[in-house]
Image 1 (cartoon, helix red, strand yellow):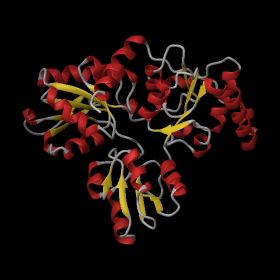
Image 2 (cartoon, rainbow, N blue to C red):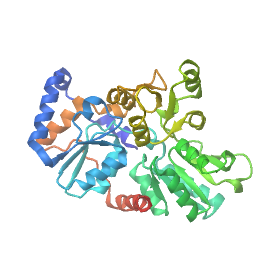
Image 3 (tube, rainbow, N blue to C red):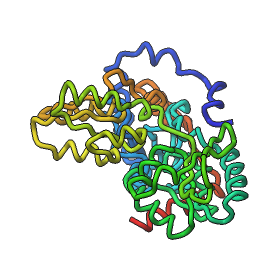
Image 4 (cartoon, rainbow, N blue to C red):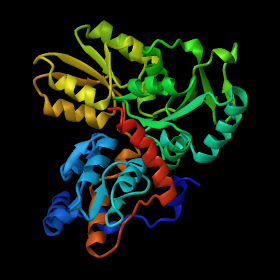
Length: 367
C-alpha cells in the first residue's frame, strides 16, 4: 500500500478553516512563525501555490530544499511545502531531533508512485536473468525512499534533472547497462543527448511485467522504467507548432521530463533551475513559452514583467498533488504543532535511510 492509499482513513480538514477569511489565515500563520522563531523552518518547492510560497523561508527544487533543511540545525520542526518524496529526503538528511511534517499526506507525486519497491525488485530479478551482472540502477530524486535505497544497495545513485548527464556518464563507467527509474522521459532525453540511439533503449513495463523491445537485446544500453510526470507529459509538439506559426518570435523552453519529441522540437530544455535562470537573464522584451508546471510559469511572469512569459500549454492546470498544500492545510499543521501534535510526521526507517543516503552520496560526490 502506498501513502496515497493510506490517506483514505485520515481525518479531513476541520471545516472552520474553510470558513475563515484569507486575511485571518495569513495573520495566524505569521503569528505562529513569529512565536516559533528559529525552531520552525518552512521550505517551499517552486511548484507550490503563491499563497504558500509567501510563508516559505526558502524556495527551490526538492533536493536543494532537503539540503537546506539538513543545514538548518536550529530548526526543530520542518514543515515541508512540497510532496511526500521530498519530505522523505529531508527526513533522511536531518537529525533524529528534527521533525519533518507534510501538511497533507495527499500531496504525493504520481511519477514517484509509478515505481514501488516490489515492482522494482521483480524487474531487477527478471532483468538480471536476461542481462546478467551488467546493470547499474539510477533513480531520479523524484522517487520514494525505498527506490533510492534500492539503488544504494545495488551500487547505483540518484540523479537530478541538472546532473543527469553527468550521472549517466558515471554509470557507464561502472556497468555496461543502466536501469533508469522512474521517469522514462528524463532517462531517454538524457541518454539521447549523450549519443545513445533510441533503438539502444528498452522500456520496462511494471504493469505488464515485461521488457518492451524489438530486436537484439544485446544492443540494449539503457532500460527505461515506464513512468512519467503527469504534468510534463501533457506538452505536445502540436503546441510548439502553434507557437511557431502564431508567435514565431517566441522561444520555447521545456523541462526534460517532457516527451522526447517535445524536447527535440523545443529551442531549449533544462531543469527548473535552468529555466528560471535562463528567463531571468534573458533580454527585456523577449517572449517565452514555458513547458513546465503552471504555478512556476505564472510566478515567472510576475517576477519578470519586462518579458512575455506564458505556458506552452494554455489549458494546463497546476500539479494537482503539489497543490494539496494550501493555506488551509498549512495553517492546520502549524496550529496542531503549537498544540503539541506532529501533523503529519514523515519518517524513514533507519535501514532504508542508510541505503538511500548512500545513493545520494554517490551523486553528491560527483558534483
